[in-house]
Amino acid sequence: MRPFIILSTGIGIFILGILSVYASNTFNIKQKIETFFSPETVEIQEEEKITDKTIDTSTQFIFYFDFSCPYCRDFFTNTYLPLIEEYSGKNVDFTLLPYSTKTIGKSFTLATYLTCIEKIDPTKTYAFISAVSLTDDIQNKEEFAKKINTLLFPTHETTDFLSCIQDEDESAKQKVLDIRTEARAKGVIGTPTFFINTQKFERNQSYTKVSTALEKVLSQ
Image (cartoon, rainbow, N blue to C red):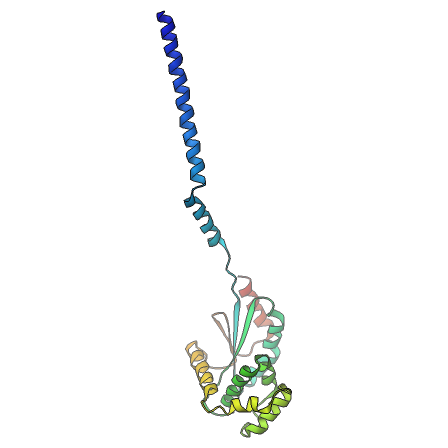
């Protein structure tokens, strides 16, 4: 009987050992499965997705234009407008800001008039720049307003533009002064000056040079 008892005991210990190993492995597998699907792990995975997501931002092109500057007009016609035609659909935002080195005179007055055009119809801003010059008689506001309305706003009443340039609260003047102050703070001391994002460029430059600089920024 003793050999049988010893054999039975050995078999029992062997079976218990197998069951113990099985239970241990089962617990580890269950623990791994619970860990993989735990809220903490899922939350980290979602956070990584947000971190890896690329934020789409536009390239900013800001041009400071002075009506008294002949180089500004040349840059406007031969470089700025062609750039808009080429790059407006390529994630580049173009902004032209009226800048005047002086706070009196025709160039400053035309800069204030440009802000009036922006209020009435922003799409006519560039047409206004192309239509006016320092040789225009801007002292006679009524006649000048008639000319602008005929060229740009044939369906509007003359008073639309005229009332704006006669604005007694001088909000248009203040806007030009604010633009001038902001430009000076950014280091603008002459025109034409333009920025591609935060990089400043000065003097009249060809379309080829500016487009090359713009392409370099867009490729980064």
